[in-house]
Image (cartoon, rainbow, N blue to C red; front, side, top):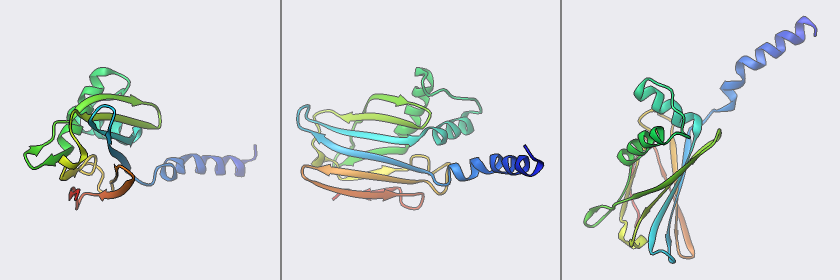
Length: 160
């Protein structure tokens, strides 16, 4: 390998992290499951962002495959995301979580709760840590679907 090729390879390897992850985003889908009668929420976030957030908050490394570390993220998510109805916050039950090197997916449900009971949403997941975090929520209501976008300046939105 020539010196020029070596320098180019070194320069590219140093800049790879900068162009590999230029945005911070989360996506969630909310829908009503007619079979179970539950309102279901599925969140997906970039693994790297979640691990960086938790490491920053708790000053240690996290392995999202570990149940204890998942519990820490669960507590964080419960503080940063909720649905409200006329009687206040809807109880969201933690169903589970999957984690791989790319994504963390969280499954929640509000048992015996139709989508119509949810009137507003708070979604500040990771926007307290990442100023440019954008959270997109797709709401599926029967045959219709709509999308809401949340950021640091707009963590609360009506659903109707």
